[in-house]
Length: 109
Image (cartoon, rainbow, N blue to C red; front, side, top):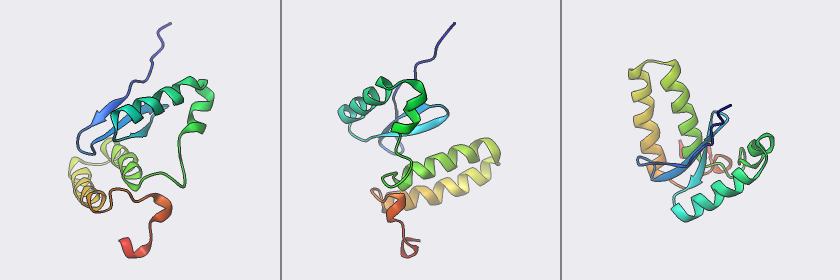
């Protein structure tokens, strides 16, 4: 049996490291050393507990949420629709690079 081990990858457009676990991209951060430290912490957990170690709430950056949405769009909508959202969400993420989901308020939009 061949077992796939997720590997960290760098997304230039976000200048951020990620790892994909169970179909979800986990934001590991922008600093390479810290990203690999977090990767090893996540991978040290048994597979059934890995998703528990992924931050799904308070500390999730808005840009990470945008990435999940854009990935879904890429597989489920037209290229034009993906491009429309990607352009606007990228501008928003560039303007508020450290904003988390829990910090988002109506005035940000």
